[in-house]
Image 1 (cartoon, rainbow, N blue to C red):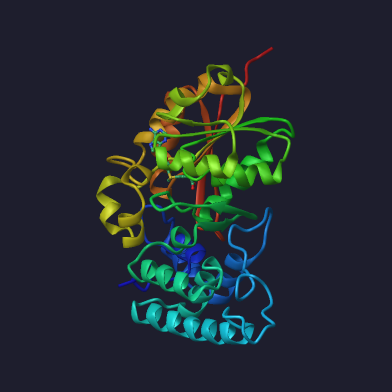
Image 2: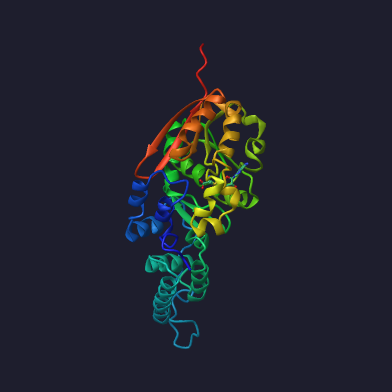
Length: 339
Ligand SMILES: C[S@@+](CC[C@H](N)C(=O)[O-])C[C@H]1O[C@@H](n2cnc3c(N)ncnc32)[C@H](O)[C@@H]1O
């Protein structure tokens, strides 16, 4: 059964979810009122490169004009699709999906309007798999990101890191997407600042394979900085690090979609949620360029400790928020050297 919260179409569900990642109940309730229409326009918009799922004409081989041709006629196919779509919506609604019609339409597009393929996708969704993993993509910050089962679904709130990253990146700067997951953040920053050199790394081989599909070259497998080429040391202008930051004791409070379909390594940030951030902050000074910046998403409750962690590593930190995205980021810099 899809829970009421997790059945909300993906973009809005992510920014609205109740977890250690949410900043405030006010913002949370505002985000949770996002309408299905806004979801649909976000999910179905055509952006950037060609979408991975392109509707094909009915009958697959084009127009059917011979009465003896066994292939389905366009009209028959349309009827089947309409019926299949209605059946898909009924099945999703029965599974507890609030935006059943909208999701059925998204799944139909992903199934290339093939009724059989649609039925398979609908069953995966009805079993609680995140919509983006079922369709194989997420629309995020103006780019379409390919996704795979088991890879963290980029959250709407991470748009704050993308904005900050794009603002901080010099036109030909060096950007590293550490803990890259699908590579969504790096991809979105590169969409905004096309001249950057982008490198990405993750500890999860499934995520790395997915990020390679999205980013192409320069995606590495390994533990934080250990994965990066030594040549990047001291040169990174923007270090995006959307690390796992949910405190271990809060993992059970996450929606089932996250708990059951995203890897624990993508979510669990240890006792206070800051274990991976600590490790990133400890290495940041060595990898950042003199005016480089480390950007991480955290919660309001973690802000003070995160600031202390940065200071403990000789770094300066400021906190910035985006209420519309229900998002909070820490911006970490090296202190400027006197000439
Ligand atoms: C919260 S997800 C963020 C993914 C992606 N940046 C995004 O925003 O969609 C955290 C990611 O960190 C990765 N990760 C966790 N620990 C890591 C480590 N020690 N080294 C590298 N990656 C790590 C996980 O595999 C996961 O893909």
